[in-house]
Image (cartoon, rainbow, N blue to C red):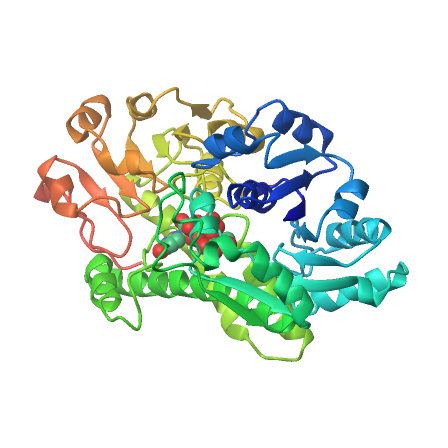
Length: 467
Ligand code: UDX
């Protein structure tokens, strides 16, 4: 089928390349000329597993990158809108990019098209898109509007797209829903998974991807509710982790004990520095705004955010408790991205913590396997902040190592070597990547989240003092 994807950001680019992988002819449109030029010349603008291979496979074949919308709309059966919906001052999503794109799409519609909202948008955006198309004089018989939210995670986006837990199609008319059913057919019938060149993953010929058709408003709420629920799980386990610590219990064992209950499940129960990234913070705020607009009391969403913000504070206080004062202390910060597997630093707890440490007078040397460049754009190096060329350089002569991002590399450190290069063997682990006993065996003072701190020798153990 002929498809147009508007936006070549995370969602747009991944969707465009994956639709091509499914056998469709895709035109990916962006008004950022520099990005389109880069994509045309073979560049890969984001750090994402499998993206370079799929781009190499489909560029100029299944997917073309262009900057003008008009022709692409005229030639396509479906137009996916995947532009940014940043958070406005009130917490509401700013839909001005979506509206601008819809106005442009309107000009290119001559026969029946399905306009698909792929960006995360508040409920009733579907209705607004319909109204804008009407206002621009498009015949109502010539278009359908569908909500088809995307659930992909950064770092595993390609695999999430081609092996989805579910595909949600929110359509208020059958004709439009049918177009989406045909687009996703390779995944829902399993024909894609039978191909020898298919990307392996959780779906298969026997277990193809399920597709759920709902009303447009329902689909819009499914997306916000899913993200808010995952954020809730994270905040819940973080709150329990603080309680666990107060009574000398172990949050890792608690999460394991809870996760074995199949009604709860083990995923998204990792205590740490709280969630970051471009989705959860923005979407929880936008969902809360939607509830407020509709007069629904959903204070739980406010509490999710409060707990999340507190986690960074909790970690900072642990650094203080372990080092007493921070002025002039040399700290190795391992991790800058908001999670492992990505170079994205948007709303990264790591950056927020580093800023706070610098403010307190610490000397920070940071290292991240992928996010160094992006971090330096927002947090430039200076007298107190350096970026190390390799991991152990960051730790050289450090008073403490801080683990801020859950990169697999950080979970497999050479602890003997690490101890040798550090000034004092102190690790403060915001992601619980190590077992306390392992750290004791290697002679480290080890502080983590929701577990008692552990000390190699009795004399290093502080007495409990009342605050
Ligand atoms: C998320 C959703 O998972 C995805 O469905 C949606 O489309 C976009 O938002 P993403 O932001 O890429 O995806 O990352 P995710 O892996 O969900 O992690 C989000 C944040 O939560 C990260 O900061 C991560 O470190 C944190 N997290 C996740 C935890 O702190 N604990 C956990 O148990 C899981």
